[in-house]
Every structure is written in structure tokens, then in C-alpha cells.
Image (cartoon, rainbow, N blue to C red; front, side, top):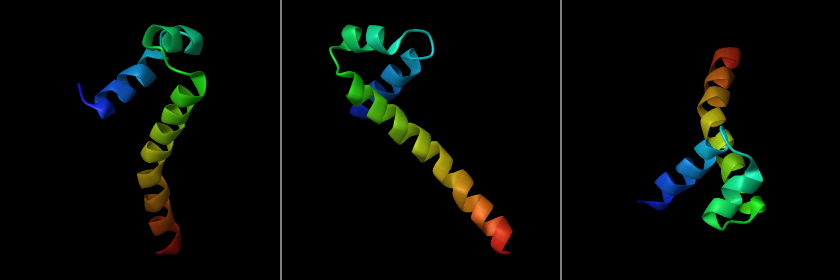
Length: 58
């Protein structure tokens, strides 16, 4: 399993389990998982922000 797939899997587990449960299951610190989740949401929002900028300036 690649690191990227592992991170995505951990983030997806947060849909059905608490942060504490997920962290214990994978022996991770909560701040690590929160950072991964923040990175993921920013990566997903980046294309939306750039397309919004194109439509407002054009």
C-alpha cells in the first residue's frame, strides 16, 4: 500500500469512526490525521478556487 492510499484510507475511516478510534487503530497522533484531512480538503478545493477566479475575472 502506498503512503497516499494509506492516508486516504485513514481519512475515509473518519466518516464512520471517531478521530480517537482511528488514531488508536493505526497508532497515529491526532494532529497528524487532522493535518492529512486539512491537506486533502485544500487539495480538493484548489481546482474549485481556480475555476471561480477564472469566471469572475473573465
